[in-house]
Amino acid sequence: MSFDRFEIRAPDVRERALMRDLRAIMTHARARAPGLRAQLKGVVIERIKTPADLATIPVMRKSNLIELQGDDPPFGGLAVTKAAGFERLFASPGPIFEPQGNGKDWWGGARALFAAGAKKGDIVLNCFSYHLTPGGHMMESAARALGCAVIPAGPGNTEAVVAAIAHYRPRVYCGTPDYLKILLDKGGELKRDMSSIQRGLVSGAALPPSLREELVKRGINVRQCYATADLGVVAFETSAGKGRIVEGMMVNENVIVEIVKPGTGEPVAEGEVGEVVVTRLCGDYPLLRFATGDLSAVLPGKSPCGRTNTRIRGWLGRADQTTKVKGMFVHPAQIAEIGRRFPQLGRLRLVVQRNNEQDSMQLHAEADGEEAADGIASALAEVTKLRGTVKLVKRGQLPNDGKVIADERPAP
Image (cartoon, rainbow, N blue to C red):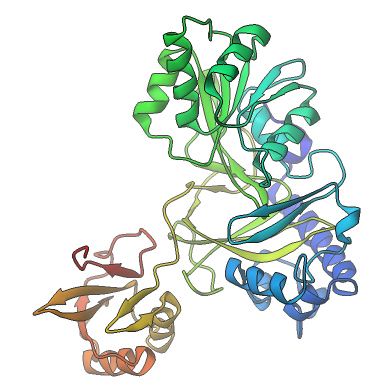
């Protein structure tokens, strides 16, 4: 069952609507937000008609955000609304400062919570943090949008939370999956009834199959969502017939997700692992092509849950694989540059090792036949300013895991 008609509209209808709204937001924001105006310099907004056209906009990274906010506080010139006009103001580690705008479900979490099984009239135990970071308020606004009452627990103070569960009998849990297990274990230790919790929306920590299975045995079905403090809820798990978990995560309706080569803004083919880049359609704090630093891939085909948006495979690791070799940093973007110089090659992976007490690096390159390995080695030296060897392998031999730089040196 879908949250609303927008989740089941035809993909081409969704794409036209998203791009229309994006053009309107960019036009409005460019006149009022100097940081966005700088990011859009030279971009003809009227020509942004498909997601592929987004490649003309430079990528914004968290490191850029920190620098921009330092130069032009509080939001680096990216916010259309002044700080006093927002509902809440946060300070996350980095430090990075985020606003919460006015309006129902500003973070876009209601769809994820609905997909996890929450409904109007439920009581939600919210164990995401309310302290300076937006996680707690993100999920509370989602629950309130669904018509749920909220216990604003946050993490910690476990015995008091257990007592609140036994007293209020919440049906839905929001928080990290490991903290849910802590609560259940503590409830058992204190002989308090925790059986009211039947559904959960979890994020912020790993949910291994063993923990999911344990929660199911305890009568709790949980679904995961992928969210960040900057973007809100980006994607979430859904269910098909008889509550079966659908593979991957459904992209939220208020964002555009691209998968690009790590360290670049270049889109990869469907199914290829790359970095998640998100454009958020938000009138007061739009973020354009925000690079999350996370790895994922687009799943092919229509979801059996009935929703028609794009699905991604979920979190597959970190894209920031920058490493130091012989005292110099080597970046994924440099390996991508070698790929641009030799388009006949497939996947590339720089393997860094330690031999004879010295750093060494070898570029593994997929090729259909014999290539000019010496030329590739020369390009590697020119781009990285370091010498390395080249190993040619057959196409498909390098794993599709998004890893561009593999640091295989022993830990110090």
